[in-house]
Length: 222
Ligand SMILES: [Zn+2]
Image (cartoon, rainbow, N blue to C red; front, side, top):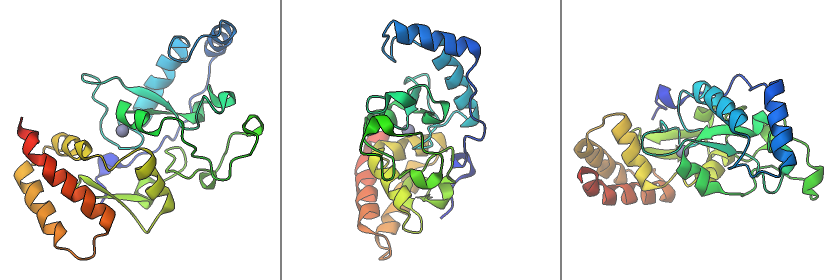
């Protein structure tokens, strides 16, 4: 197993809010605008910044976000509903695909969060997060792929496991997307995955994922 180099990236440079961003944020907040309705310039600028930092790929599933067929999203790592104080914190935003964004919704990702959410300060270390955080963590230290399409946890990493669970990275359509983006042959993938099933060292989660993908492969040609 090896992580394809294209799946490996981190957000190295944190976006810096400009005076214009702050003015817009203040004005739109004063007008009580929803995240989806306002903050247009700020959102567009940070999205562009993150898209470059993340090589146009989703922070979680690591697939290239296909702007032609879906909207690219800005995801709040820490829920903006539960923690409005981090709504405009650049380190709380990542570029991601719509499916990963919709999978997590507002579930918690903070390790030992404060009981009073309004008292929570923004966590600044890798250990403060229960998921693979693209600002702090090396993806490949926690997650890997079988045949470039099936995601698995590395070294029993709890962060890797939580990332798969919260963002539903086991969804079989992701395997199809990966195969398509790497131009893999579906017959070869099918044969490789069938062979993996005879390997007694794979765990139950991986076996379930492989079976779900094999079941879906016939529809890839539609
Ligand atoms: Zn994704």
